[in-house]
Image (tube, rainbow, N blue to C red):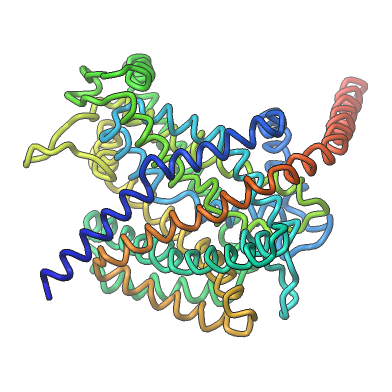
Length: 485
């Protein structure tokens, strides 16, 4: 029996390596490149407008159009599931396994991921439905069912996407996050994992039972707080290590484009090829910002908006905040701290959360470990909340009704306890595979509907330009009024 389990585990790991290998990275990033060029780089050109819309007070209101939550709340709920342990653990792992140059390729992955994220979210809003509870239900499964010309093919694709999303929600979105929290709090504060599991389960249940309105309220507070908390902490470390910052940035770019770069100084003894940097940068970047997986589109469909393109731009900024801001902070903290390339007692490279902790400890001492433990707890718990909504809507699609949603919410909360107190490598690997397989039908759908995506973007462009002119006119009038006073 033990031999069978070991063989099965090895098979799953081989499958996991394959689905998250070069083919998947090319498909994910390639789709983003294709959409970016096809749509005339509008996602890049309109990014400033999208960021302004996200940060404006108007995005926190629900007065424009129909939906369940405000545009800002929908984005924060999507970010709750997106900004997770990958921003701390994934970046550190990529910079060790692929060399520090992997950070550059994570950024490249993100800038093209803007188009993928926009596309899946915009389509999800366009093809969303109102369920029997009067709530919005949408996501790639509805887009595939209603938007693809071949309805039978679309129905099969939608069903597969929803199935993989439900599996991933219990694994990547639940057990792995709960286990990360219990590991962090137990190792840093010696809190028993059983106590952590009980508290996590109760708090999760209280929030989740309230549905999207409850989840979005918590996410709208927790996500901005945790992001600002982590970014400020990271900037302090970078400033304190500023003497090494210039060399760190040079090292990152040098090892990103060198055919065979050998680390030295701040990179320790790390040796990495350019292809390794590309591979790990793309893989961890896609895993971190989830552009192309379709998960964020499920939450985007709940937003109150009068136009799917408008909310598509707002949700697109999730990739910017996740990778270009948070992951970059982690990368620069590690690059400037001099800990990259250090080894443990066994001689293996220190990576993952331990490496990020070591980087923070160069400035904060023991407090660095506590800081990262708190950050992991916040990031992972928000991921649990965001992924519950993703999984619930996918489950609702498979069941054909929302009447079983409460059963899913309770079951999901109970699984949090299992994740907190046990290590289930097989379940994690299996759900990791399901997470990757979500992307396949979603990316196929985006490519097949690329013409419609382009048409929608150019349809909205005059509206966007008019709003830009009106906003500038209002700002100028306000400035003249102040000068007059």
